[in-house]
Amino acid sequence: MRTRIKEILRELSLKKGDFILSSGLHSKYYLDARMASLHPEGLFLLSSLLLKEIEKVQGVEAVGGMSIGADPLVSGIILMSQIKGNPLKGFLVRKERKSHGRGKKIEGWMEKGIKVALLEDVITTGSSLLSAAKAVEEEGGKILHCFAVIDRGGGKKIGEKYRFSSLFNIEEILED
Image 1 (cartoon, rainbow, N blue to C red):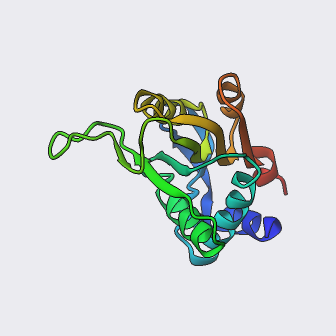
Image 2: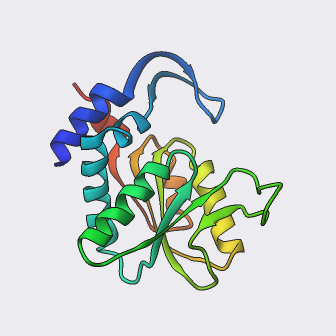
């Protein structure tokens, strides 16, 4: 599974050129992991691999992350967890609090004391995941572990505050 998803990530998600990342940094490559997580085989493999890692963390009740990068991952993982008979709840963190309705920043299952695993597709600086973590903690959630598909280097910053792991580091994706 790991070998195949690495192939899919390289084939569908890795783009070479001149890019400005959300952090404002310039890069000679861009990783659009949504191309893999919104591909049927890609989502199946990513969900399977991430769920296997999440299951190693005792007590996780829900998975979530910053919308839009985490959306397909959360959906795939909660579906796979139901199929396996150990269902997890899901939630998505908005960049901005809704200005209408209930004015929520977190959609889905978030309640005081819930134990969660946070997800991100690609970590560059870690700021998006840390923003999601802040929102979860403000709502009373307890973060047990943070996971990424690919760590471009920001995982070290996340690891200073939370347990962190990724399926791949950037070197594994870029290697020939």
